[in-house]
Image (tube, rainbow, N blue to C red; front, side, top):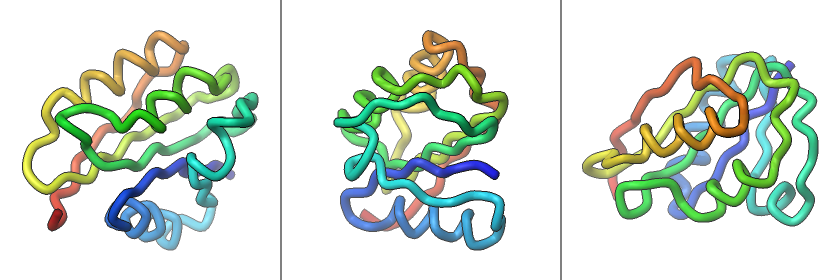
Length: 116
């Protein structure tokens, strides 16, 4: 059992996260802005996903805040899915670096092109 932590401005990233969770019943959805930024926690899950859009060729601030404040000590597998209208910019590299600094290896990274 794992969780997919998602952030969405237009709904595209939520739809993407939901589609993944619907196909894989082992994952539940958690909206980053509703829960974790103000209440940092130890992530008990061994498997997690992060789904969010590109903002100005990088990660949205709420996603950066989540990564900075959460304790990922139990995570063994992490995937990142970035939704975008055009280009991912440096979002993948920034995500990989931020997770690495928290002791997490990004096991899978993918982009999904959707309308803006």
